[in-house]
Length: 88
Image (cartoon, rainbow, N blue to C red; front, side):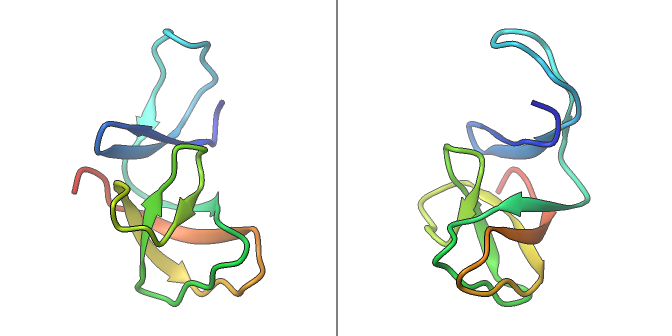
């Protein structure tokens, strides 16, 4: 779905258009986006956010890097703003 955080292997980006499973879609790999996060987790500016399989982010460093936090997010809150940093 357009606007969703998408992970393909170690590549993390935001879908720019809607697509059914198996269809081609555009994936933005740069820029700042507000994405869902684990609610019970606080993020400080500059922290690394890691992509989860459900389209959100958390602080689990075994997941692919999604990006750096650009605006602090409190515990609890549902979203965090990150600058995408894909492929690391």
